[in-house]
Image 1 (tube, rainbow, N blue to C red):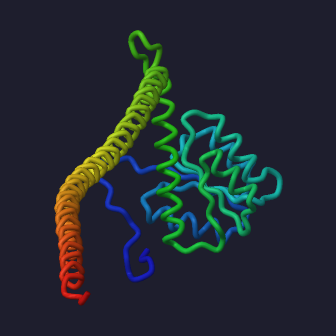
Image 2: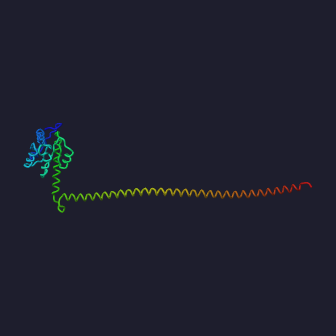
Image 3: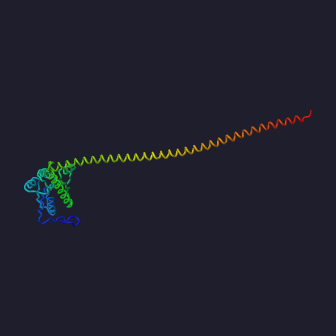
Length: 265
């Protein structure tokens, strides 16, 4: 039966492979026939019934790889069917078909590894639901096998995995602490580099102040020498001025003496 775009849905199983068996439970004959047809093209050997009671009776007689049940049916509902099917181990893949799944149905389906299929559905949607149900069944089988496999000294593989997870958690804690220490070390290095740069700047400023002080001392020494030379020059000028005054006084005295001698009588 071709899907949209002409793709063939029928798989190509090995001639020697035993076909998987599917059970369809739906009170709507049209939906039931469609499911049987599509599942047949997907390689399943299909049994179909119209009620949950008939479906569970058939389920007790045969082993199925997949159960597709309607949610709302007279008598037993789809969830009643799921509950009864779940009590058998290993449980088959489960698909719940419904026209209006509620949030509660979605959460319940997730908790019980049930794949929801909204009506009306396209062929590719049914195919995807079948693949998802198969994956859920495989995961459940793997979990059951893991729980039952014995491991010497550890009880079973689940205990071993739990112990390994504890070791991994401890290693992650150690790594996280190491990363914290590395970040702290990097922070200290950055702080140390900043202090070193500040110290270098202070050293350069001190050297600049020393050079400036030396230059100032040199200028003051030169200024002091100039001042002393100026004081000596002023002293010499004062002495010369005093000598000139004394000479002027002697000259004046001589002029007065000459004048008295030249004055008549």
